[in-house]
Image (cartoon, rainbow, N blue to C red):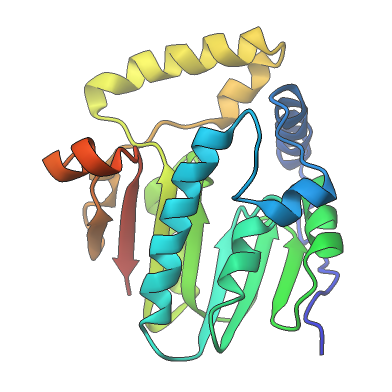
Length: 245
């Protein structure tokens, strides 16, 4: 049975959501991040202008996949902000996994459903809200390069934890974090960057978070890019944070 389904969104009429979706697609197009079906099938191994970024994302996805495989159990996985679905498709290769990719980007969700067809994989066009999955719960929830589009780490983590089974985990990867004294300059860079693309409104939807925002949660840093070893040998810029229920 193929788990690819059409999901009815509960708040598609909300104007801010529509604004964000349109702005996000416009930015992706300007950045040349809308991939063909053939390119998508190759990700993260692709000869592209973002080749170096994809090498980093390949390593982080492999670390996450290996970690989850070692659990040696059936896993119900949700990826929030899955975009074109390449990572969800990789996670669906984990034995006994059932993966759902969620995004409010209709263009890439349609592409993901078209390109990745696996019995244990579903892609849903909807926002991440308390009522999106009603009483459904997951073993693992993944935020890969998506947390920066949520204004509050505290709120979104509380929401994610409520969707986890007992002993479940939230994993945050491929996400920039800033120290408090870096935030103002980072905001200014984002304003200039989106203005240079001709889409300055997008800066209102991009948020600069700090690791300190995880304080109060039961979390562990599984990859720290600031250690001497990682600075010298790995050179991957993103933290890998695991929050446990």
